[in-house]
Image (cartoon, rainbow, N blue to C red):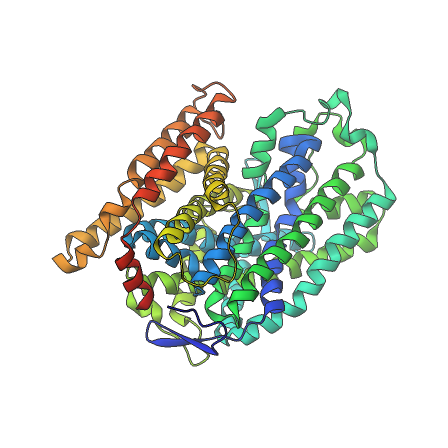
Length: 537
């Protein structure tokens, strides 16, 4: 078996997706999907949770996401398909595990474009005050704000309908702006005011006023991982990438490296630009006008009107680019779910431009509903981060399984020291999931449970042959794994957990129990002959 390195089109679900995305264009997609609303808000929230140690959170988040990206770089070159996150577990473990991974990924994906639109609208409130209001201390959208958000979200779907070339061209223009503005903002703030004492001030708790728990919360609920996890959009476009064997590793690694450096620069600039009076009540009480954005508020406080104007314009352009990319990426994973057999077949419908049009429409409707239960930007950050890392935890398992199942299948990239790094990636994903907190995890697991209820309803009405295709044996580890994660989260110290586990010991418990679950999941992999048959279909 071989993998075609640069076909001009690829047959999927009886139709053809066009391979028209080049190496640099895929890199731009990775960058554009990472530098979205996260850079506009996360520096503030991370500092509130961790103080100056937010810098450590960005470094740790960068290391974790780079490891996950390296894992998925190998999987992406092994099977360069649209909606890859839905397909890799299908090859290694079968339909049930693949459904779990792709459904949790879809929950994160379908919420990402709406949250980027929320960021745009919240920034626009500086000039359009009627789009938002304050409720119980939180900024929420008004009915008019929701209507404006829906119009924007629909517009991104329309652009995607005209084909991947339209998406690539629009994004390539936007990404240049998205790279320049954050760097200019960081350097301008650092050259205007940089209080070195902010990083060490003992009166405010020193460098790490909230300890390791604060760093962990900044990673999960503070938006650090949310900002980085956008790299997955490049994977979902793999079915339309020319020369995926070279393009995918290049795009993931180079794109993430650029973004990590930019986010670190922004966090350092934000902390240094704070006036001593801003920290009078401690890091947890920093309260810039979030509706107009912390960086814009800082620029206005420093008399840098030109920078504030630049930031307001970027607050529309930057998240819009990310929303544009994720509208397309979410359609690809929905398409892959239908191809795998656990989403309706009509979602495989492609328009004349080779775009999964029905998937775009369905995701728009679901995305519109998200504006109702999660009315503010920060409300969605933890949910998206938790759902994304929960799905990403399957990648390390699939990588090691497929190394054993298809050792000779060509790969454009091979992860070094995979026997060590893959389990480590699984542990990191579980830790970040746990640190998101019980209030978010509880809601997410209810959604996952609803998905499984749907699956087993379908299973009950299926014939014997169709039931066999669900590969239940390969997914036996999922129930005890999810129950264990739920129990530790409920008994833990994050997000309104009960606090029954001592601080520090809860993190140790998650780390220790992740190891046997990794190997249990690995033992559940499919037989080699089944993988070969699936790969050839």
